[in-house]
Image (cartoon, rainbow, N blue to C red):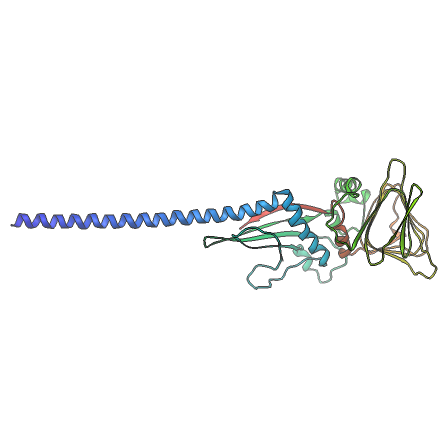
Length: 351
């Protein structure tokens, strides 16, 4: 009897042991499965976010059609220096929502531009100042309950538009060790300015000429091969591009048509590979580029330029002949219509 009882107890103990081990094994397996599944979900979430970022940064069409227009929109709508407030007080600054169908797992995608921190430490901010403008692209995703955020940051604007120097010449760029950058930009203007797609709206008029052009207070008259064309430019932003052709060296003349006119004013950019002759009081809110010709001033009233001057001309440029009052809002706004203005370099990708 004692022997039978002992065997029974041993069998019961063995059953308890086996049951305990089985429960532990099952729990371990379930826990392990949850760990593996969570890891898989986390990995899949990260892969989803990475794929969306890559679809914007690496895919050329997406970058040109989605990111570039958003950058232009910010630059042309807002005045620098760019700064984003923490609108939701959640530590994430405001930004422009990107209008693009990313798919079901992307909860939001925003882009913004920010000025360098040193800019905001200045008690008084002059109209022209040294700057480094950054682009910040943020994508928030959610995959099977797992949320992920990735942020991409880098410089966005060509350094020659951001330096304080209002007159950009080869001689001045030697002092700043930017000669190669200067010549590269001027060559870019020369090669691409006629065909450059700046994503402009209908309020912007682009005039490409290879002959002579007369600008007065109301009209622009283009003459080429005995053919004349008139442009009414009032209430328009102008991109005037005069290039050398095989047979012609362009000439731009700015001259009042009426003695009653106080001055001629242009909002936009003037690019000239020939001579630019100013015979009347003149004001340009934008950028002036002389690439190969001369700037000739035949008026007692100094021309006013509120943007930047890029000069690679035939004669030395005398900055005292003009009133160069560079203002970032005009440099950037109208610079955004020029090839070579954007120089995007991604430096940081973080979660």
